[in-house]
Image 1 (cartoon, helix red, strand yellow):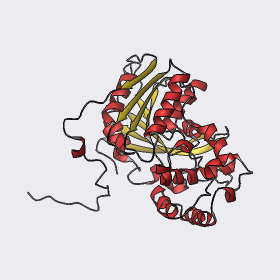
Image 2 (image 1 turned 60 degrees about the horizontal axis):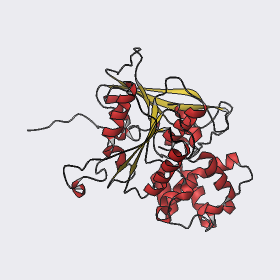
Image 3 (image 1 turned 135 degrees about the horizontal axis):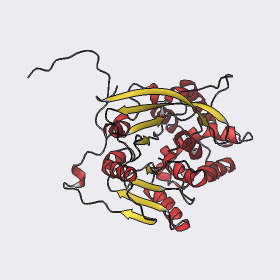
Image 4 (image 1 turned 180 degrees about the vertical axis):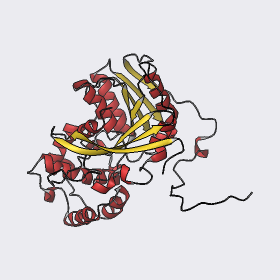
Length: 348
């Protein structure tokens, strides 16, 4: 399922894990009919870091007919003339190495997703990676509704924190062989988790299976291995390379606005000369923020390719008052996408 005037290319490439070992990964590219070009004549390429789909092999966006988050960003980017590179992330799409070993999707290990992209939380991690391992031609990153630090999310975000923590568990097991899930899960939680693992489901199913049970130990936030993992992978407070635009919805109950704002403040205080911009959108939740902010991130991308200078130092971009009352705007998607089953006629 593609918009008119776009073409799709799926492919495999070599990536590397959080530990630096090589691993195969899959991705897709959306080709616009009339690509934008840079001053040197090369195509303007944007990498789309997709949101949480799941942690199983079949959860790769390139495996779905709609390419998972379609009109959220990949389709608009391609239709605006950008060659859009969309990695599945290692462990999604390609589930095993050539010798048959399972590839763990290192979920929430943002530096690993930065390796996937080399162009979310993942986008923020790319900016942090650029400060340590610069990539030629890199222009900047946009992080929308990012996962900054799950340990700092409020108790009101319990269901989202639960899902994030469960998805991180395989990565923690891989990084820390002594990590014991019995110190993390309740008995019922471990039973439910094994069920979900057999199902190989996408995020919504995991949420339904797990949030109805008391899945985690009461003291799960004090788990030493989780704290080490978050310290290793969290966004904020670290040096960034290039320009970073962070966008957050004020009504996002999953990725709490105060947690994101705190991460932004830590980064700007630690590195006052960093090219860091922050946009806070009133009234919008997690994914709808990307729709509401489309003007901001598309204009920002265009400016980067045009060579518009970004001055060092923190900037907080102001959002203008909308022409209609905020409550009159659609807050969540009220539609779905499906494949056309055959030709149809419209009678007028």
